[in-house]
Length: 569
Image 1 (cartoon, rainbow, N blue to C red):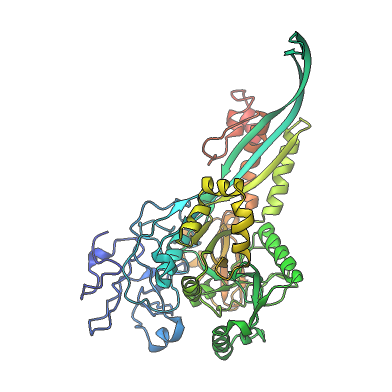
Image 2: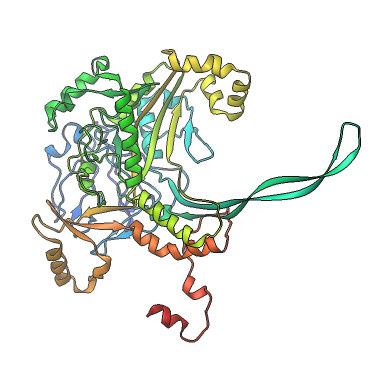
C-alpha cells in the first residue's frame, strides 16, 4: 500500500487516496504533532455487520450511519482517547484462518490481512508521544516463545509498551496432539565374559516401548480474527500475581471497596498505587490456592481472563484496558455454564504502560516481564473427554493413550540486559552453573532474597477467541432473535442465511450472533478421521493435519454399487 506512513511526523498533509485501498482495513493517519498543522482527515467509512458506518477518525466513539458526524469534545477527553500503534514493517504474520462472515455477509477481516496488524485492543487509552519505530533484538525458545534482553526495552517504558503490544498481537499456535504406546517384554541371547575370562551365552529379558500412533491436528486455523487486534487484559487487583517481586501479591485499593465502578474510585485507586506499600501485600496461601483453582477452571472451560467465575470475589477477574474493547467483549463469551459473569467489565487501576514504566525503573538484575497470550472459546475439558472416547473405541492394546492441547508462541518475555541474566537464558551456561553448584549455592539465594536479585511481572496478556458472540448493530433493544431473523430475511431476500447455520441470542442491547467453529462442530468433522488414524497406527511427526480425511469415499467398500447411497440414507 502506498501513501503516508502511520507515524510520518514530517508530513503536513492528510492521507491521500493511495493510502486507502478498496476493501482493506484503513491505515492510520499521521500523528498530530501539535504545531498548528492541519488535523489529518479520515478515510472512507467502514461498514459493520448491520450496515452501519464507523469513521476511522481518532476520538470518534459513536456509530455514524450517515458518515457525517464529526468527533465531539467528549469523544477525546480524559483517558478514553484512542492510541494508535506504529505501522508493522516486519515479516509475514502467522495465518489464523479465513475471514468470518456474519448474517449479512459482512466480513470480520483477519489480523494482518493487509500486512499491517492492529495491536491488542487496537486503541489503548491515551495519545502517544513523539516516538520512532524501534526493532528490538529478540530470540525464540523451543516452543516459539519470544524473549529479549534488549537494552532499550529495559530503559524506555514507551518502547517496552509498544513492543508488548506488537508481539502480543501475533496469534499463538494451537494443536491437538494424539499419542498411544504400549510396552512389550522380549528375550534375547547375549554373550558375556566372566571374571576368569571365559565367554558364555545368557538369556536376557528387556522391555521395549512401542509407539502405536502419534499425530497432530492443527487448531490455529480456527482462531477468529479481530478487526482491532486481540483485547489486552490486566490482572485483577485481588488476583495473586507476581508484581515485581519473587512472591505473589495482591492489591487492595479503594477502587476495589465497592462493586460499582466510578471515576472517583478509579482515581483514588490510581493515587493509592503511587504509595504501593500501603495497598500491596503478600498473597496468603488460601488466596494462592484459590488462584490456581481459578486458572485451571478457566482453561478447562475455555473462558477468558476477564470472566468472573461463579462464587468468586469481584476483583479476581482481569480488567480490559480499552473502553471500546470493554463494550465489544461485554457478554460476548460463548459458554453454557451457569453463573458466569462478563457483563460488568471494568478498567484497570494500572494500565499496561504503568506496569512497563515500573519494570524499566526497577534496579533488579534478574527481572523479567512476561506477557501471556491465551486462547478461549472451547470447553477443552469436554473436548478432551470426547476424543479419549474415540481413541478407546478404536485402540485395542492395553497401553497408554492421551490427548494433549499444545499451545506455542504464547508468551513474550523481556529480561534484564546484564551478563548474568543473559547467561541464565543460555541453556549451556545454565547447565554448567548447576554442575559447578554456582546456581544453587550463589545465584538462587541472590535471586530469591536480594532486593537487587530477581523480580517478575506477570500482570498482562492478550486473548484470542475460537468462538464468541458478536453484537449485530442493526438490531434494537427488546428485539428477539426470531424477530430479527424474520425482519432481516424480509429486507434481504437475496442474502437469507441457512437457519441451521445461524445462531442468534437476545441481549439487553439487541441481538448477537455466534461466530466461529464450536468444539462440537469440530469434533463431528474429525472424529472419524481420528478413529481411522488410531486403527491404522498412524505415526507422523511432520506438519499437523489441517483437513479431515474423507472416510466414506476412501474407506472399505468404495466402488460397490449402492455403498455411498446407503451411508447417506
